[in-house]
Length: 314
Image (cartoon, rainbow, N blue to C red; front, top):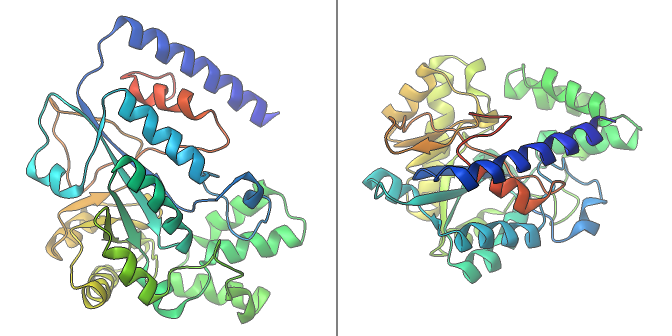
């Protein structure tokens, strides 16, 4: 019932967007997109090895990029944003969070369309090569027949805990072996894989804290350490220090943004759903991002966000 209602709301919003785009010229703008894991095809979605997030396949990513390029939109890097984008254009920036090895499957698409992307890395997961805690929670509870609604509620409760306590709870419940990755779909990059990946000209690495700690739940010293450890790990691995941070869980405060900036970061990305116009101030350390879902119609979502007005946002 809920999925049917969401589908109808999507259709209504897409209709509104088409009408709006037909009568109102689109304003020059920047939009930043957030993805997490990628699936090679719809069959891979049925494996239940990791939390499905956007449920986006490689083919859907390609269709999304193609749609915006056909509409005259350019895909840009953080450096271009920091340098100041020409005010008359339409821009998109792609970002991926966490450090999944499956993000590598985006490379043929990025190469085909010559589109850059930023990959934000929770560096302790690379260092320890453990499954991400939300994937452990998801797949172990799926095995027990738990509903998605209950799984989401459980994860929201766990997110209120400091990062160390989250993993301790899950290890006690499911055992340490539950943190062993099952395969390429759910595992993080290895250090050497990430080092090689970062050398690709269309790839840039970003900070995502060391332990994927939700920084609002930590002291100033802990926030600084989480950011600094991630910066140092990536600098040691690749020779380049990140300029952009994606705040874990999209959560940020003025204090967190200030600390991140003091640690040398120049762009900060949140979970706020937002589109930026060039006649408005752009808060560089607290930029919002939007999401594309594989279980919804790709072109329809793209048109909804291309419109400057929506029934659900702005």
